[in-house]
Amino acid sequence: MAFCSSLVSPKHPFIKLFLLLATIMRGGVGQSYTSVFIFGDSLADTGNIFFLAPSFHSLFPPYGETYFHHPTGRCCNGRIITDFIAESLGLPSVRPYLGMNNTSIEEGVNFAVVGATALDAAFFEERGINAFTNCSLSVQLDWFKQILPAFCNTSSKCKEKFERSLFHMGEIGGNDYNNPLLHLRSIEEVKTFVPLVIKAIASAIKELIDLGAVTFMVPGTTPIGCSPAFLTYYETADKEEYDPGTGCLTWLNKFSEYHNEELQKELTRIQALYPHTNIIYADYYNAAMHLYRSPTQYGFTGGTLTACCGVGGPYNYNASAQCGTSSLVRACDDPSQYVSWDGKFLTEAAYRLIANAILEETYIHHSSS
Ligand SMILES: *[C@@H]1O[C@H](CO)[C@@H](O)[C@H](O)[C@H]1NC(C)=O
Ligand SMILES: *[C@@H]1O[C@H](CO)[C@@H](O)[C@H](O)[C@H]1NC(C)=O
Ligand SMILES: *[C@@H]1O[C@H](CO)[C@@H](O)[C@H](O)[C@H]1NC(C)=O
Ligand SMILES: *[C@@H]1O[C@H](CO)[C@@H](O)[C@H](O)[C@H]1NC(C)=O
Ligand SMILES: *[C@@H]1O[C@H](CO)[C@@H](O)[C@H](O)[C@H]1NC(C)=O
Image (cartoon, rainbow, N blue to C red; front, side, top):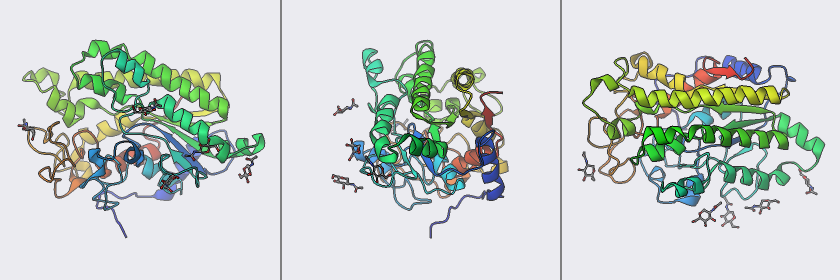
């Protein structure tokens, strides 16, 4: 059996499950979830990347070493946030869409793809920005429409099944900013993408509501100013740029906050337009910031801003020598002592704590309040 080596284990899984269900079911009927559909990027991909880019570095050791004991494509040493959420709902890890061939979609499907953007690849091509994948949110939505007839085929059946489905919309949008910001585009230019990204997320949610979706969990982006990749790329001698409490780059975190504020405003608008739905904002940003502010409280003694798996540089991150690309790039002995797994993504230990915070409602906001 594979047990997680994390120092922190869930204290009261049943209470958490109850709280999440109570949250999700606010104003609804007392039933439990039977399906989870996930749209998103590398924060949620559980293996679609294998069918699209089989040489991607998250498909090689030491990815997956802590939990699955082999790489799964997840950008982590083990489970990711959506795995923990499915687990609390009593559902198995949501399987990747590609390669499942329309089989057993009852428990849900994961459409998330590493590198996916909220905006279509053409938007970036027009601006001379390379998109890592063209499996954008609208493409993932098309995939959902393709499997829909296999999920339910009468309006009463669909209504019943949609009411028991959780739509995990994101995190998505991070790559719309990260790719350009890590390739010499100015923050001013990238800031102009925000309203468009929010609009793309909003129209995907509305389209799903039109198809029958009722309950959404919509995560915001994580604090990119605390990411070893960004800290390395934007390293500066100007101490003023760093948050003295965390060592994170303040201006980049402010940008993440800006996206998240705009997203929440839009979710409030959608909730008002569709009172029968339940739209929950999952605050990944503040749940993660909590770890950067009080790392030792959670056993993160190895560091918050240095990657567990990496080689060289002040943050143990080198874009030309990433985790999984060569046996020369090693993982630390105990990933549960680190917040960052590979410089871009977090460790299973950090993801578990973020998922727990979301499940405990600490970092959940109802869009109607
Ligand atoms: C899905 O179908 C394709 C083609 O029919 C096949 O090559 C592939 O192995 C199947 N995948 C799974 C997971 O069954
Ligand atoms: C899944 O089913 C849909 C509808 O029945 C079909 O259009 C689609 O081609 C199928 N996809 C695969 C991969 O078999
Ligand atoms: C994505 O790009 C691949 C390779 O260029 C292409 O074959 C595929 O049709 C594209 N898919 C979409 C949805 O644009
Ligand atoms: C509708 O779905 C059921 C299974 O949920 C299947 O048995 C039936 O053949 C489907 N009907 C059509 C017309 O696709
Ligand atoms: C990053 O890795 C590349 C490739 O291994 C190497 O040439 C380069 O010197 C490294 N950079 C730093 C700052 O360590």
